[in-house]
Image (cartoon, rainbow, N blue to C red; front, side, top):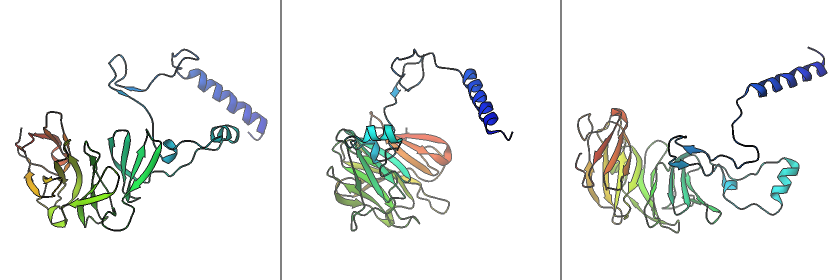
Length: 262
């Protein structure tokens, strides 16, 4: 088809045919949009979609007249986006996202319509490669920090004001530090050591969150009860039990708060 008008007519016809074949939602015209929920009806929803955050533009307030300008010009809202988000934690409306490429933790404060960064400043509080993170009930942030070649390893602690407070552990304590969980009281930190082919440190190491003193280790390399092969993460349930993702053994292993295998 060399005739531009004929090509356009055929394209328009195909578009109309495709639209006619599509299943249109039964939602009433002009009604409010249906919320995105999980699980879907007829089950009772337990999660309701609220928002998507890709950059600072999704949190910061708009400048006066920017909405009308976008409507007229068609331009998109812009902001400082995430490079490679790795993990997320939330405390009183503040969303903490570790970014392994940007070498920082982004803070999206939804209630206050603000955003900031943690770990960019040089010195003791500088982040190299922040991975999994967690926050306690008081708003203290605990961030596993490793180098790209998995060299220097420590848990970096920042206060509710986002200032660096202290570090927990060092190279000698971890083989492949991957994630961290702190109990709600902020007294104990559970650090997951991923281990590896040449390492026997497939375990969860427990530290005092204030003094940094080593308290105990949970698990060892293996496939038996209470053992791990490439553990990935740990979570604390309301009952105080520890739930460890045992990646290489394809299971979740449960312990009581004292580290006893259940």
